[in-house]
Amino acid sequence: MITSEFELELITKALIRGQANRVKTLTILAIENGIDPRTVIDKALMPGMHEIGEQFRDKAIYISDVLISSRAMHAGLHVLKPLLMNPQQSSVGKVVIGTVAGDLHDIGKNLIVMMFCASGLEVIDLGIDVQPEDFAQAIIDHQPDILAMSAMLTTTLGMMSETIRELNRLDLRNKVKIIIGGSPTTQEFARAINADGFAADVVKAVDLAIKLVK
Image (cartoon, rainbow, N blue to C red; front, side):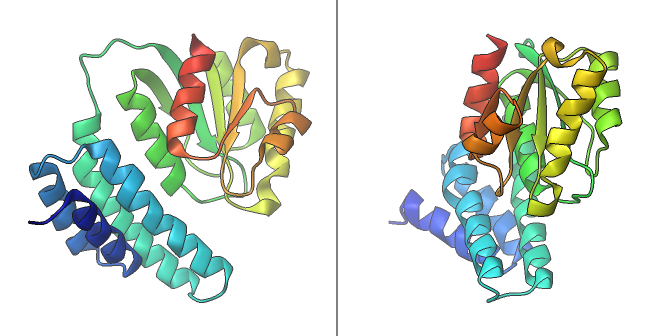
């Protein structure tokens, strides 16, 4: 008998190998076998991308390999997304989210957007390479409860503090809670730039957002 742990492990291995079609097929099978969509994300897709990140950091693979595995990740998310969305669920709060200026990474952000929506949050996704003034304008336009900023590059961390300075300049900082995330961010950095919170992973990001809106 094939266990759920084995099914999830197969998805992880396929993702690391960049086998998009196999990840999609295995994800469908996992759902058909009763595995919860969030479990597939937490126990299969995220561990796979974490391993890819470690290999890239150790220079064991190239950026092209990361992109291929990212495509496999998206194949799995494509299957899971409609299962996580609940259009009948009333909104518990509103979030503006984006990857900061100079950073083109969106896999982690897109995953968090999906999980935010699944948790009943209304999400305005500004995309990637978002300038401080664009974050500020979105707060004016949408009046969210939370601003969520993502960065995957150490070189773009400064844009988070720059965005907060822009919000202070426009007297917007006290109108919104700010959370940050991404591999180079830390709780200490969040405190240093006067953010309201930091999340190390998707599950913690959702928990933090729900806590802040309540």
